[in-house]
Length: 455
Ligand SMILES: *Cc1c(COP(=O)(O)O)cnc(C)c1O
Image (cartoon, rainbow, N blue to C red):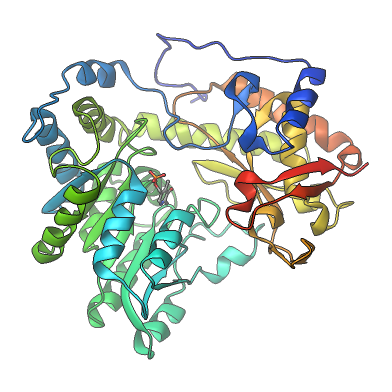
């Protein structure tokens, strides 16, 4: 089967195409920070797959039926039933997005001296653990260290390290499994690893929570890659994963294909009651949680659309196709390709640049100047450590650039365009200048800093 999107386009949005001179000027005005670019300068936006998906006609029609009743809206029950059918959890709280679920849950479960262990905490997840006063510990699998290996489940947690941690002196209050592992290059978690994690957690009386933003994409990769699962449906695999956990925090801006939403789901009534009080105080009443009735309706439809094998097959094939084109142009990516994003190995492509010249950031800037493509650096600008004078003293382990792929938004020809721009850069990588920091705040540096090319 050729790569063919299983939908046709009914509503279109023009995309800006600027000249190279206009893009260079836009980049200068933005202080060489892609986060500062306005959308009307961007041709292909691969900054995030979060809240950037295209709604279906069925979602829009459902949205029109949104019931905006303050308490007990019909839309809430449709949302509730869709989440319950998918996850099997008893207590389901809507929230405005994933991080609100994290804040509420960790506020109730964690606190100073306690520890949260994960295959890899996503950045807001870590921030909410630390805001509670607790410590976040990542235990990624050993396979994650080799960017080039084709290990099918690099997103797994390191079970030996987890076992030692649970048996050790630390006060581990919760284990969070991120599926797929967003902080770990979007790599999937195997059902075998999830089951073993659940058994360890149960043996030590520690709850297991899924950070399930990409539950459907993880399920699809399990079906493709894990022995024993190939004849199951994505919904069955997702349910099997939720069945192993005591609860879930979930951003619905990814696999529910909506622009806003999330949920917190739990089995434990007492914990759910405490979370509900916090929800009402900070998000909204328990039947809307900061969302409009129309959002709840569109989520209910999106959760059923996302587990359609025809959709997931095409989405995975799109990413795989872009990965093939990029590698054929001689550019390395973190292998194997996941689904929601590809990670370019900028350190390897721009060998002429030191980590202190921020090769990942340099490549992200070049992708915009050369082709109007916006994406995010995941390298020393984001993860490196600087001294008081702003000199890079500890580079990130890898210099990567993330190309996130919005759901149902771009077609094959858009991806071919992206690959062509990357191939053009790969023909003469040494012409890409390094970057130096002009100004940078201490907090959330990569969102706010300004840089300039080194001439
Ligand atoms: C996006 C995301 C979150 C946070 O969700 P928001 O809806 O952006 O608040 C948490 N965990 C993972 C794995 C995510 O991808």
